[in-house]
Amino acid sequence: MALNCLPQVSNIPGRASSERIAILDLLFEPCQQLHTLSLGILRDQSFTSYNDLIATIGVQLTDLAESHSTSDTAWLEKILGAHPRLGEKRVESVQSRAEQVQLKATEASQETVLMTLNEEYEQSFPGLRYVVFVNGRDRSLIMDDMRARIKRGDIKLERLEAIKVGPSVDRKNKKLISPKGNV
Image 1 (cartoon, helix red, strand yellow):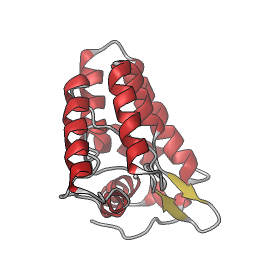
Image 2 (image 1 turned 60 degrees about the vertical axis):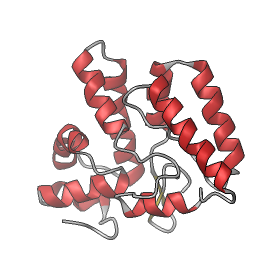
Image 3 (image 1 turned 30 degrees about the vertical axis):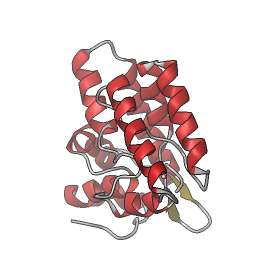
């Protein structure tokens, strides 16, 4: 079941599992592992705001990141890897399609460089996709950030950075603000 907008946060626990999954898919990328991890919390816990809900899921993800279990790491990487590559043409979620519009290349050479950086990042950090808060930042600045993070070479920090770049909700307008910049 796909939702086009977020329902009142106070109504989430009473909603059907399919609706809670759709809420997760609106807030994050569609991902079975995230559904498995967080569906119960949406059923069992009440939240005062979507930002509180997002923070709670962030704690779950951080717990996985800090775990010494290889299965927890693999689970987390499936969740973080659900995010599309920057500049990718085929994107599943409506939210990510809107985010990718901000990254359209002005030159074909930029698109090639971004594809190469995506590949280099994913080779440096297997299981992860580069995620950053774009919010109108120039594409060249984003590519410089990618290069710096690749050079830094710290996969644990990359996992935490990806978790940190989560969605938030504009309280005044009650609408989703994308994790990445609106990417």
